[in-house]
Image (spheres, rainbow over the protein chains, first blue to last red):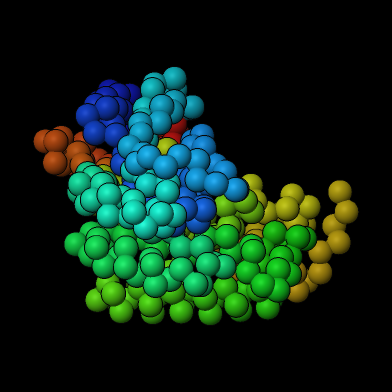
Length: 247
Length: 69
């Protein structure tokens, strides 16, 4: 069964009306430097500022990022991705309660919440647990991601396959299990922690799928309209060629 | 381009790709069901039913048409 032109046009209009009425809204929670902006930029081809040395801004961010539908019948139509973020979280104890209040205020508007914990920041898990404790009423809409998986020791990243090395993968899985268990004790529910590496494109599809699965059903489609990556682009071209059409 | 990947490397990649494809399908299916739920919620029952009955191939074609690629 296929749609005719008129039906397609009505659906496109309904979609654009909804996107303009309430832009897709994602909240990202995580300590400063955990890679929140990097992953949003990778998933949606946005241009949130990224710094590897200091927090890009200490202010609470509630921003509508203007994007454009790139292909198809709605090409050129402006759309927005709304991002709720506290870039300075975890940097200054005198600001923490303010950040958490901001999250309390704005999280109800989020379609989905991405909680980012950095793989190599084990010492900060207690602080992350405290943050989570303050935001417990939203935990059902949270997706937990383990960022910077490529930096996990022994850093034997397999460049030929663009995947973690064997031992690195083992440690990544152990870290994921450990973080999931620690968050679960606070959350009061089972938690799954998904590893990813924004810089390498590793784990992004699984993370993206988890985000869609955690959206309210009637809004689940809205993020796919903004998806800006294909996992195949992160597989070395020579390997894809050798694999042929039937991987 | 040199095709010098070993069988073990290719097997590892195949397994990873299978997992990614499975995940992609899951997201796509959820997205299709989500659009059906949305269309119902805004009163477009007939269109909702049509989208619900789209085959995987037709759904992919529709996504491409509206620029979800």
